[in-house]
Length: 326
Image 1 (spheres, helix red, strand yellow):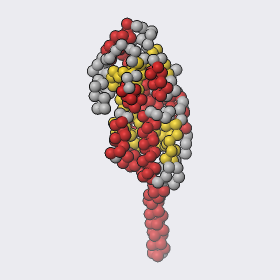
Image 2 (tube, one colour):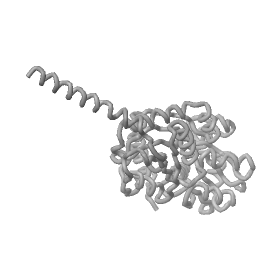
Image 3 (cartoon, one colour):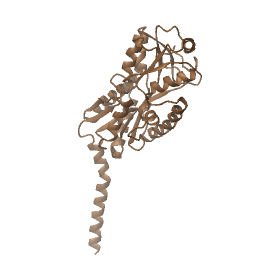
Image 4 (cartoon, helix red, strand yellow):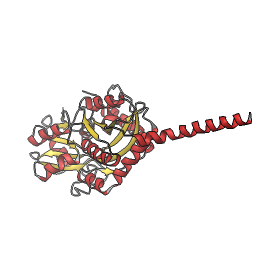
């Protein structure tokens, strides 16, 4: 009996050791093939730029292709719904933005739950919006712009990259707090909004650094404010909106990497570690600086806390602004 007991213990010990090794094997085996990174915006914006940087560095680090796929529609809802229903095996990931993960669910009925259906991997970076106006508008400051629009009610429009987007919410909050009248014009992505801003078909747009700064440098539009608490180092002469006309105004977005709920923890941990390495690298930080992104590189737990807090914050903001999905 003693010999049988010893044998049983050896078998149990072997099984236990094998069980403990499974996560390590799963971690070392992933990825065994190409990985799709889904982006809920058109190519060219900050979210797309961040996703492509991650895809490039993940491919180099992990030895398998990471391919970006842009799925546009429903304010980002189509892409997020697609990823939420994808197999939780680490081969379909999402680079999402606050706009479609923390705003869209609180102002419109969606088929996904950002908390229930996803596992946050890492919050990659954040950035304020830049307030750009067409060069034909006779204003160089936020206060001058507000005064001019107030004197000409019904004559000005503001663009957004889609109903329910952060650019929409930022524009709506700006109009409401300024006490002015401007019509909202929604586009399928920020790039189309910028085209019409340059053409003068709309007069105002809250855009990303990378969308607007090159055109401002070329004299086609004028930058009159940034939506953060502090000025952006790359454009130090552009004041914050809060200091130049609307005290307390602040809207900041972020971009993060997520996986479908049920994805093995070993894959989450490995992806998070690589993401933090990417964000910490000098090359990535230089790229982020070019597009006005402040690097974060959070842990999964930190990102989860941010997502929960922002869902509450933007639910309150949407209620105050009386926003509804068009």
